Image (cartoon, rainbow, N blue to C red; front, side, top):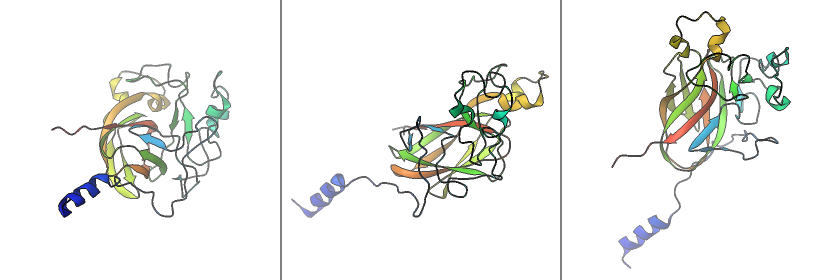
Length: 233
């Protein structure tokens, strides 16, 4: 076999490049009695509330230590709805990231561009400069479109990959603008849901890696679908 042929065979047999988590990262994929699979998989859905374990400064940054949803609002009368498990009402209540869930009394009692599922967890009370980390298992390198499930005003949020800027995600629609003649309470703007494509991201390599969501004031964020973009030939 000629030398050039040997090189070609070696390249074909060599394993594909694998991404690695940033050196020294101490966060771990979220798991509990219900969520047992570990790292969220791409292509697929990244649930916003299932950010990594590791605490403030490692798995997330929040401007205060109170979970204003699970640890505060959902202890008030009527906010842990009948039939909803305590594990949903008070999900991650002792962490600073603010989490709640889709409720009949707030989210499903009026029209929205998209109807969310009852008990869907989401991040809320968002503030500029806050972020959460996700250890994700990318099964296939390449370009992906990002589809977000969210509420409230259009915002630009950002993703970084292994601590490097990776994507700008522009939430393209203020769902409230679809109902200009409504006279509902002001809080309802935070419970009018939309689902829309908001950007693209490239994963140069497959494997475990660190995806960071940097968000801004004003949105509730339920999940992000990462859908492969097939290259046109």
